[in-house]
Image (cartoon, rainbow, N blue to C red; front, side, top):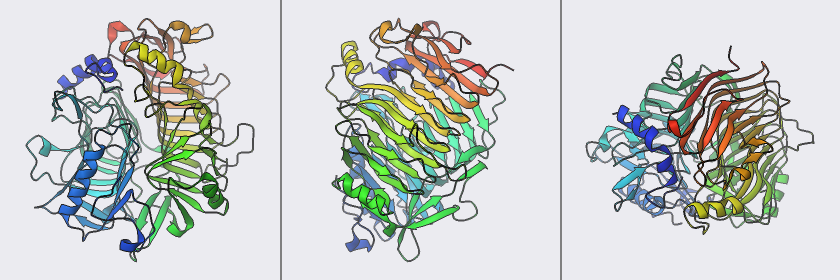
Length: 624
């Protein structure tokens, strides 16, 4: 995932595989509005939130969002965070559509109780970044991270765009990007940008609770579409998963095409969202958990759940001390984190049942002095959403802890603790160190879309190439990505990459994962640095030896040992051999360096240099 030179890691690792695929698939807020009470009579969300209303001239909104994109389009490791929110109403016209491009650390969301309350006539897009030739060549979406689009209707209008650009609404993204609660009509949706020069690669994403038009997957390596409706879906690369989605493609031909389709989602809960009622008052809607669900939550009216008045939230700014935040939480307040980077030298402690922690505009908590930035008690109904957690210079034991490993955890199946769009970074914008990124000890937890990332590139000051990557291995340290100790934990969209031991280790009983995406670390200097006792390497997904019940639907582990292509990893997946542990539609793939000897437990051919870009699939393990 490097973009700094023509021979970027992501470009190198996927050239053959995606080349074959592509041949086959032909901190200002602007002038428009501010969030302060003076103009809107509502809460003060701080200087990094811009709220538009239908009376704002289209040209003014367009200028504000164009300026925002210009600031953020290349700010991959920047510190600015922004949210652009639309009050109920219609924006753009047939003759003057609103055409928006979304950059890094940017949220674009409607403020309606339903997605149909806010309509954008125009387009909301993310294009490839073109990294060579003055912005004309080496065009990819492999590092288009950290952006959010939600809770509105998009009536596609390409007026004024050229022939190729007018052919679809483009959303060319990779990890840590979500589309939620959307109603898209009037044209097609493309998850790749085929209008720019090649190679046009993209690395996966997430859609939930949305009504979609004809959708082109194109070059997306892996993708999860959950509890949605889709008119049609075309193309696939390695790992495309659908759960509870009306119109999803059939998966009987797996692995050609590589679709994994579940008729329903076993446990789901939609992300909380801000909305404005008919009297202009702000609230947060907290959707209820659903079991064995299918389709959108808002088709028959307001999404089932509870409404919390914004006055019941402590609206935090990056300057607020943690002790003040904790005091407000202890008094029974919920927490809304406005956009910005928060330095966290002691844990934000969430102890009360049903507490909501909602970040907007990619609010980011950075560990200071080895702190655990976010510590959630194992109590029912806590929801954490829209928050990024960064490791700091001093090693933290964990970045987000849910429940105590040996304590009392009282979450319930009908009101699970839920993490939605919660992202983690170890390195990238600065040196980072942690033992474990995400640790889940409580039972009945739902992880609904996360990216747990030990950075394989960044601006930490390392030199590029093999020597710099050796420095990264010794300096940006993260042993484990996700450690799941609780029982009855469900993950829908679990993306974990580059950790130095097990990327994911699942010790709890009755766990379920729906789409798992993993890249092993690029940077072990030698085989000796990548040994698990006498075993060569650490599996990308490990189910604990004592576990007797576990299910995985749609999983991929990728290898790119750039520092030392001779390194081996014995298995992509490691699980106990027992009838209650079942893996469906799993694969490994070689991205041009290193070898995974087997897919799972010695089963499956080697993903090695003889089959670069060609996945090794296992349809079911254990075999029937």
